[in-house]
Image (tube, helix red, strand yellow):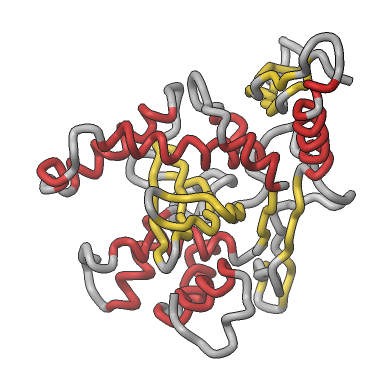
Amino acid sequence: MANHPNRGRMPRPLQHLHAIKDDYPDAWSQLDVFRQDKGKDLPNWPDWCFMPLAAWYSIVSAELQVDRVSELYIADVAKLGALGSWRYTQSIYRIDSDLRNAIASTVPSGSLPCDVLYRMPEWCVYIDTPGMKWFDKDLHGFFAHLEWDANTSRSELRLLLDADELLIPQILHLGKWTVTEAVDRAVQESKNNAPHLSEILPSDYIEHLSSELFPLVSLLLYVCSNGVEYGGSDRPSIPSAKRTKKGWKLFPAQKPRFWDLGKETGDRLRMACNKNGESGLKKGPVPHIRRAHWHGYWTGPRDNEQKYILKWLPPAVVAGE
């Protein structure tokens, strides 16, 4: 993150946005050109993807005046892809601390619910994670957005981790498989593109990386799920282009917006823990907390397109009030 005397008071994701703009000053004007060519001179990628990373790769190449981006700068493609997509909404999601801890400890089981991820509330979200760790680093938060590979038409979940002074890209290939396999498929492709990785990555790398990603995927699923609790009546949404003298144009958000999630559920969790702590003073069954879990189901008439709904069911107080 670039040092600047006036940026210390800014939210961290906004500091990163300004820093990447310093490194690639023409990026935003170039992306307007790519977006306008969507479905014309360029493939018509899905609406849930703001812009494929192939376009961001071209922007980095043009800024660096090279035909091929070296390994030294390849991470900037992922950074621009996340930050450039987040720029138009600038939402920061803050989940109640006790609820966040409970969700993060709920390991996603079974196949990734891709249908839920495709309904991400915005092109790119930033989820605040104070107190969490990424291996040995403080994890302040992470960006999440969806990628459509222009070469293979493959869907990917792209994360950009805000860990200490680093922005760390992570990739999961989406499909009817588990989080671990989603990580494994992405790592195998990275090895194919950079064979030297096979020599330096430990044999248990996939297992360790997946375990670090489980909490982040769970938090993202909550933000995308049907049961998310917002603090007010407003809801985040994907912005629409506005008509200008030069045609339709998409304008970035003027400032970050904070969304506080799950306070009511967090209050219930704290109340349940307090009652559980007092249970030794009372007669009868000892209150305990049933483990949280994800519950998914299909809704809608069978003869039409059904919609997959995912809800995070919080820990329930058993034998309590």
